[in-house]
Amino acid sequence: SGSAGSYSLEMVRTPGPLDLAVEGTLDIPGSTSGVLSDDDAMLEDRRSQAWTFEGTAGRTVTIDLSSGDFDSYLTELGP
Image (cartoon, rainbow, N blue to C red; front, side):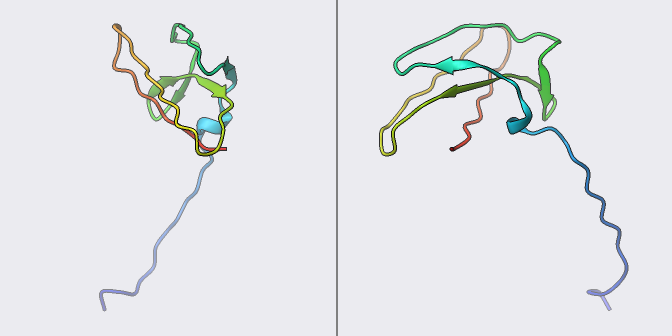
Protein backbone atom coordinates (compact mmCIF):
# COMPACT_ATOMS: atom_id res chain seq x y z
CA SER A 1 0.00 0.00 0.00
CA GLY A 2 1.06 3.68 0.31
CA SER A 3 3.61 3.25 3.14
CA ALA A 4 5.92 0.52 1.81
CA GLY A 5 8.31 0.36 -1.14
CA SER A 6 11.90 0.75 -2.16
CA TYR A 7 13.85 4.00 -1.99
CA SER A 8 17.37 5.31 -2.50
CA LEU A 9 19.26 7.54 -0.05
CA GLU A 10 22.55 9.26 -0.83
CA MET A 11 24.63 11.37 1.55
CA VAL A 12 27.52 13.58 0.52
CA ARG A 13 29.77 15.82 2.57
CA THR A 14 29.21 19.49 1.81
CA PRO A 15 31.10 22.41 3.36
CA GLY A 16 29.46 23.94 6.41
CA PRO A 17 30.16 26.95 8.62
CA LEU A 18 32.64 25.00 10.74
CA ASP A 19 34.76 24.33 7.63
CA LEU A 20 35.50 28.03 7.06
CA ALA A 21 38.92 29.44 7.89
CA VAL A 22 38.55 32.04 10.65
CA GLU A 23 39.25 35.57 9.41
CA GLY A 24 39.90 36.94 12.90
CA THR A 25 38.63 37.43 16.44
CA LEU A 26 36.55 40.45 17.46
CA ASP A 27 36.79 42.08 20.88
CA ILE A 28 33.63 43.09 22.76
CA PRO A 29 33.13 45.97 22.26
CA GLY A 30 34.77 46.05 18.87
CA SER A 31 34.24 46.29 15.13
CA THR A 32 35.94 45.52 11.86
CA SER A 33 35.38 45.96 8.15
CA GLY A 34 36.32 43.79 5.23
CA VAL A 35 35.61 42.70 1.69
CA LEU A 36 33.93 39.58 0.35
CA SER A 37 35.63 38.49 -2.84
CA ASP A 38 35.45 35.68 -5.39
CA ASP A 39 38.22 33.98 -3.36
CA ASP A 40 35.96 33.57 -0.28
CA ALA A 41 34.26 30.24 0.40
CA MET A 42 30.74 29.51 -0.82
CA LEU A 43 28.15 28.35 1.72
CA GLU A 44 24.57 27.87 0.62
CA ASP A 45 25.36 29.75 -2.63
CA ARG A 46 26.69 32.78 -0.72
CA ARG A 47 30.22 34.11 -0.30
CA SER A 48 31.14 33.62 3.35
CA GLN A 49 33.68 34.47 6.03
CA ALA A 50 33.97 33.29 9.64
CA TRP A 51 34.76 35.51 12.63
CA THR A 52 34.97 34.57 16.30
CA PHE A 53 34.43 36.32 19.61
CA GLU A 54 34.50 35.26 23.23
CA GLY A 55 31.38 35.92 25.25
CA THR A 56 30.16 35.23 28.75
CA ALA A 57 27.20 32.93 29.40
CA GLY A 58 24.09 34.99 30.20
CA ARG A 59 25.55 38.23 28.80
CA THR A 60 23.69 39.77 25.86
CA VAL A 61 25.71 40.69 22.77
CA THR A 62 24.32 42.65 19.82
CA ILE A 63 25.84 41.93 16.41
CA ASP A 64 25.10 44.23 13.46
CA LEU A 65 26.25 43.36 9.94
CA SER A 66 25.62 45.69 7.02
CA SER A 67 26.81 46.34 3.48
CA GLY A 68 25.92 48.88 0.85
CA ASP A 69 27.15 46.48 -1.86
CA PHE A 70 25.14 43.30 -1.19
CA ASP A 71 22.42 41.83 1.02
CA SER A 72 24.33 40.85 4.14
CA TYR A 73 23.56 37.56 5.90
CA LEU A 74 24.71 36.54 9.38
CA THR A 75 24.71 33.09 10.96
CA GLU A 76 25.61 32.67 14.63
CA LEU A 77 26.96 29.36 15.87
CA GLY A 78 27.17 28.47 19.54
CA PRO A 79 30.20 27.18 21.41
